[in-house]
Every structure is written in C-alpha cells, then in structure tokens.
Image (tube, rainbow, N blue to C red; front, side):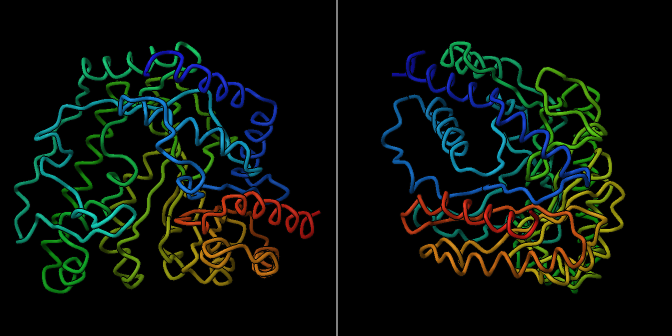
Length: 409
C-alpha cells in the first residue's frame, strides 16, 4: 500500500502540527534565543531512541522511499508530543540527485566498513593508503534533474498535496560531507591522520587545502546556479534568528550569506588546540564564514579550543558536549555566543530515569551558566537507548522544565 491513503492522513497531521499556534510560538522563542534575547533556556530533544518507541514492521508503505517518508513523519508527530521546543515544519525535505563521478562526491567511495550488527560500530576502511590523493576526482556541481523530478513526483503523489516536498539543491558537500573532518577520517583513517601530522604534515596540508577548495567551489557553483533555498539553514538546532530570514522552501536562489551553517571536527578531539587550529579549523574557517551565521561542535570536547573558535567571524553557537568541562566552557563563552549544552544521556536515560540525579545535574550546570551570564539552551542528543522505557523521555523534559522554572522563574 503506497498510495495516497497510506500517507495522506499522516501528512495532514504533520501539517496541522506545523501550522499550529504552538509551533508559531516556538519559532518566536528560537528567534529570540539565537539573537541573545531569550529570557530562559529552551529544550531540544534531538534524539530519543525512536526505534524503542516504534516498531518499523508497523510501517504501512512498501516502497522503500515512501517508508522513509512515513517514518520521518511519524517521528515528527512523536516529537511534537515530547513537550520540548522542537519545531515541526510544514514540508518534507528531499535531497536532489547529483551527477557525480562514480556516484560519489569525491569520485571514490567514502564509507566505513560494514557494521557487524544493527546499531553496532564499524571500523574505518581507508582508501588513501599512501601519500597520493590523485584518485579524488570530485565532480562539478550538477543536479540530475530527471532523477530528481521522478523522486519528487513519487513523494508528491503519495502525500496527495497534504504536505509540500522541498528539494534541497545545495550540493553534496554539506553537513558531514562539508566539514572536511568527517570525510578525511573515512578516507585516510583516524589513527593514520594522527601519524600524518607528525610524519607528513606538508602532504596533509596539501590534502586539506584540496578538500577545502573543492567544497568552496561546490558551494560557489551551487550559489551561482540558484541551488540554495531559505530551507537550507543548518545549525544542529532550530535555525531561527532575528538577523536571518526564517526557513522557507519557496525562497530559492539565495546567497550563502542568508543562511546558517554548521560544522564540527569530532575526529580531531584528541589533537592539541594548536594542531586543531593548524590541521582543521583554519581550513574550515573560509567555508563556514561564507554563510550568515554559524554553529560549531557536535560530540567533541571543545574546552581547549574555544580561543581558536573565536576567530570565526560569524560564529553564533558553540556546543558543550558531555565530554567537555562545562564550567570552563561557560567561563570562556560568556555572553559572546549561545552555549549549546548537551547533557550526558548515559547519566539520565540510558539505564532508567533517576529523577533526583537529573535535577542535580541540571542545577549544577545551571549554576555554571548563571554565574557566567551565558545564553544557553539544552540539547538532548545521542540517545541510543532509553532502556525500552520511552515514557522516560517525556518525563525528562518535564523535569528539565521544572528546573528551568525553578532557576529562571
């Protein structure tokens, strides 16, 4: 069953949620939050072990592409019921298909090895095994219009007009394929990079420059071709701010300077601050500064590199992960950036919900942030399991809300 009846009602439900007064209010709150005008921290549940909430065998669509669409919309409905400040938008995103050498954005496969089991870890399987990267042949920016049209029409037919389909045409070099760090580690190997900075620094600099220039050129070509839309914001949060236009898939052909951009370098978390700057951030900087506002950091510990992050002219948000020293980060960030705090899910949800522990965790960190006058929000992410007690996520949000009111009125 892949016809209108399968997805239409679900899409109408998503649209109803997206156009509700609740979502309108959340958009206002995030505009203020990201522009240093918020009066209390907001909550974003980025990950919540959805597969422990929902059995994928219950999906109704048989077509793989439509099953993915159905799954994404079900997540939107569930997210809307968590009680956090996540925003459901009234469109479904689809990445355009691109014409690429060998079907790969670098011209060669950039993947990890096979995972031994679902949810397990995969080993690096590098392709750059010697100091020669001539095998990398990234393609010019070119959308496969026919394939993109066919995929879009399939989704539109299934949705029956209940929800719009937004085709992102910004090119293949965005998010993890656009931060250099992720693909570098996959192609060269994480441990090998650590040797390269000592054994072959000049060669590594050449490779990094090649990757930087490739990404910059792809973004330039996408911009020149009208490939960026106002729905191409990305800040690993809710991409609203008073300085930029709201997300809107109907406004196309915009410049990078009108968009948020996100970057990270998780693979460089074990490098010294000086090497972090020399071998990754200095190459990311021109890419990220071409955009309007930027956010930096995912799961890595950024405690020691915040002085270097300050060199990014358009930086607005800095991630403080569970591995960071939150107190030191709070002091360094002050009121100059939005502090995106990511509390440790392993301490709070992965093995059950200890309400007293959650409250103490919140109070301790809220004290750090109040003392340093930080503008901050709370992102719950990397939740791989909730011990098969999904109701705990909602209760976690309730507890955090209670603690926010207690601390900030």
